[in-house]
Length: 157
Ligand code: UDP
Ligand code: MG
Image (cartoon, rainbow, N blue to C red; front, side, top):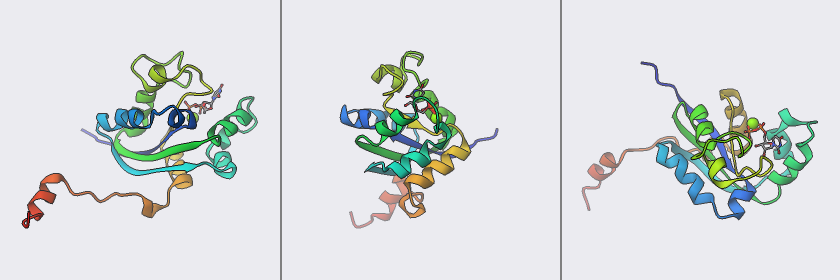
């Protein structure tokens, strides 16, 4: 069987942070078993927002989208796991919360597609591109020991 371990970029958007949903949204991804390998809170600059959403430049919602994503802090994450790009999008639900399946983040915590609380990369190329906008390679924690190794090494406990 083929297992495809990937990384994706996730952001809790300003409405999610302001509404106190940070821990709840992170928990959805952690509970699935995805490994958080990068995490920070930041204000998105206009330059970063333009890079992130370049595919939407010129669309009717573009200006409002840039205003939204730069309107307050976001919590940016890189998560890793098997088929995580598709899996994270499944957990998020459809762009418009009204179309999202009940049980998904957007269905459970949002009402409008303009304020849909979470972002996740849509394909491998987007994931690499978006991770590079928000994280330097050295900001990602990729080498983890498991708990058994840590306990075994602690002979001075
Ligand atoms: N968006 C919007 N109006 C629209 C479509 C999208 O405000 O008609 C916003 C929404 O916040 C969405 C983001 O633009 O999450 C990016 O749109 P995309 O189609 O890439 O959706 P996503 O990948 O986030 O599900
Ligand atoms: Mg998208």
